[in-house]
Structures are given as C-alpha cells and as structure tokens.
Image 1 (cartoon, helix red, strand yellow):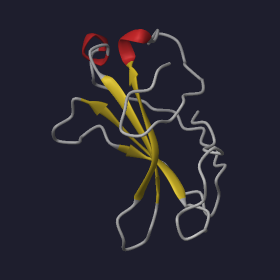
Image 2 (image 1 turned 180 degrees about the horizontal axis):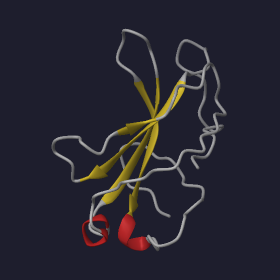
Image 3 (image 1 turned 90 degrees about the vertical axis):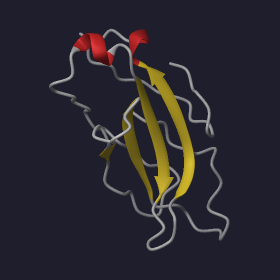
Length: 113
C-alpha cells in the first residue's frame, strides 16, 4: 500500500494531481522490472492495492535489490510530476510472507520500512 499523499499540496496550478505509482527493482539498467498502476483522477488521497509479482528472479537476487516506488502525477503531453518516492531494501523484508504496510514518501531520497 502507498500512503495517501495528504501532506502533498495540490499542484502548482491549484488542481489536484492525477497520481499513479511506478515501481522498479534496482539495479535495472534495461528497465525490465518496471510496473505501473492505473491513474487515479484528480485526488490527493489515492488508494492502490496492487500485488507485485516478480516471477523468474531468484530469491537470492531479489534480496540484493531495492524496490524503488515513485508516485507521479500524469500531466498529459507534459512531463509527469514526481509527488514522492521511497526505496525499500528487499533484504529487510521476509520475502516468504506477503507484506502490506505504509511507507513514507520523500523526494529523491531513501525511505525506510
């Protein structure tokens, strides 16, 4: 789960964002692990309940990676706006168990579990 960015003000133009979540398993130079949610329209309080499944990646490899989760606002033809992001070290999680939780979003830094 991604916490609602209720601390986030609306966009600079005063409108609510059209947020979506993008994830990568880092390092990922070819961006083959990219996943995206659907866009939630005009809200500062989106809710995403998405399961991330990475079949075919050995557990030992997963434990050496970081899940980079970014919340962006879709801006049509313009560049999308980063609302916040968090890095989650997978070695800190029990990968044999489903994990549901809240993660604090920051800006271009690492968050903690």
